[in-house]
Amino acid sequence: MLSLADFSDLEAARLPIIHVPAGGNIYCQADRLNDVFNILSGWAYLYQILEDGRRQILHFALPGSLLGIEPAGHNHMNHGVEAQTDVLLCVIPRANLAVLREQHPDLNNRYLWLVERDEALAYDHMTSLGRRTAKERVAHLLLELACRVRKTFPLAAGDLIELPVTQAVMGDALGLTAVHVNRTLRVLKDEGVAEFRRQKLRIIDAKRLTATASVSEEMMSLWTAADEHRPVHSPKGQPLNASLPRTRSRGSPLSGR
Amino acid sequence: MLSLADFSDLEAARLPIIHVPAGGNIYCQADRLNDVFNILSGWAYLYQILEDGRRQILHFALPGSLLGIEPAGHNHMNHGVEAQTDVLLCVIPRANLAVLREQHPDLNNRYLWLVERDEALAYDHMTSLGRRTAKERVAHLLLELACRVRKTFPLAAGDLIELPVTQAVMGDALGLTAVHVNRTLRVLKDEGVAEFRRQKLRIIDAKRLTATASVSEEMMSLWTAADEHRPVHSPKGQPLNASLPRTRSRGSPLSGR
DNA sequence: CGGCGAATTGATTTTTTTCAAGCTGGGTGG
DNA sequence: CCACCCAGCTTGAAAAAAATCAATTCGCCG
Image (cartoon, rainbow over all chains, first blue to last red; front, side, top):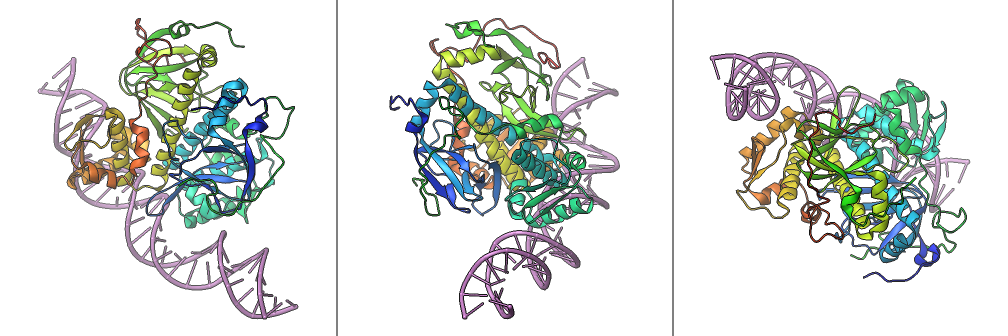
C-alpha cells in the first residue's frame, strides 16, 4: 500500500502549493481525501454541519496546523474545513506522509503532538459549550484566539489584536446565535473588560477577561505553544514551505467526491 | 531522557496492573503523570471541572482506551479521569512507551489511531453540545454508547443494553441538568423510541432513534471500530494484558501532585 | 425497617433563541 | 464625488428551551 520511496528531503514528498480564497472549502464533510494539508498562511476553521444547516465550528486552524487527519479505516472526513481568510496550503499525499513519519521520528512526534494538542483544545471547547455561560464562552474564545495569535500570556492591556472572525462565526463556534454573541460582546464592553469591533479585539482589562472566561492559567500554555513544524533536516526553514504558489478556484479544490 | 532499553516484549515495559474501584479517580485534572494507562476492563470517563464545580464529561473510555495522553511540553493533564465502574489498568511509564513506539511501528500507528479516533469523537460531541437540542443530544449519546458496547450497527429492535451511566452523568456529558435529561428520556419513552431505566437501555425503534439523534450513518463507523490493541509480537493476546492484579484504594492512586 | 442514592414530577425563573426592523461603514459604479 | 449596496452589526419584543427550586417516590441494600 505504501510506496517505499525514500524522501531524503521533505520537499520531495509534497505536491505544489495551493491557494484557497477566503470563504472557499479546503475540503468538505464526508469527502474522501488522498492528501493532508499544512497551512502555510491564513486562517481556516473545522466544522460539522447537520442536515438542516445547523453548523458547529470545531477548531480554528492557524498557520502550522495540519488538516485532513482522520483515523485510519475511515474513508471520509467527519468534518469540513473552510478558509476564513485567503489560505496557502502545502499538500502532502497521505502515503508519502506515512513514509515520512517512519523515516523521521521527530516528524512523527511532531505530527503526534499536533493531534494531541488539537484534542486537548477540543476538550477545552467542549467544556465551554457544555458548561460555560454565554459571557464566559465569549470571553474564553476571545482569550484563546488572542493568545494563539500573540503566542504569549498575559496580554498587554490596551493591546489591539486582529482576529478575522465575524460574530456569526463566533456564534457557530460557541453554540450561540450571532445575536446573542452581539449582546454578550456589548456587556463585555460595558463592563470595561474587552472590546471587539470590526474584527479587532481590544484588551481593556486582561486580568478580568481571564476571570470572566473561568479559565485557569495552567490551561493556557496550550495556546502559546508554537504550531509550526521545523523541517527535520533543513536548518530552520519555513514550515514545510515551498516556492511555487499556484492558484485554485473556489470550492473544494482537492476533494474527490 | 529516554532509557534506551530494548523491550523485546511489551510485557517488560509495563508496571503491575492496578485496580481502581468505581467512583475513584484514575488521575485528576492538573496532575503530573509519569505513566499512561490502558483500560483492561471497566468504564471510566474523562472530565474537566471548573472552580465552582460545574463539570463537563468529555469522553467515555471503554476497555482498550489509552488514558493519560497529553501533548509533549505540558506537564499537567487538562482533564481528569474517574472510574465509572471498577476498572483494571495496565500502567506503562511514559518513557517506556516512547521507546516502544519507536521500536514497534505498528504500535506507534495504533497509538496514533487511538488519539485520532478520540479527537473525531470529541468533534461529534462538540456538535452535540453546541448545536443539537436536548432530545437530539440524549438520543445521540444513547446511540453512541450502545454502538460502542455492541460494536455493531444497526442495533436490533428490542435489544437491552447495559450502560453504566446515571442520568446525572449523562447530563454532565451533554451539557444539560440531570432533571432535563430525565424529562427528555421520558419523551423518548413516550414516543416509543427508546427506554432507559436502571442503567439499561432498551432500543424500541432503532431507525427512529437514529433519526432523532440527527446523525448520519457514515459517522457511526467510529463507534463500531475495535478499541483493543493486539500486541505486536504476541499471538492474539489480550490488550497489553497481564496476570498480577493488585488492588489500590480510592482516590488518585498514581498522581504525583 | 430504615437509609440513601437515584429518579421523577411540578411550578417558576433564567437564559437563549427567534423574529423583525433598522443601522453602519467600506466598496463600487456612474 | 455621490448614491447605493450589502454583509455584518445592533436593538427590541416575544417565544422557546433549559435551569432551578422543591418535593416526593423508587428500588436496593444492610
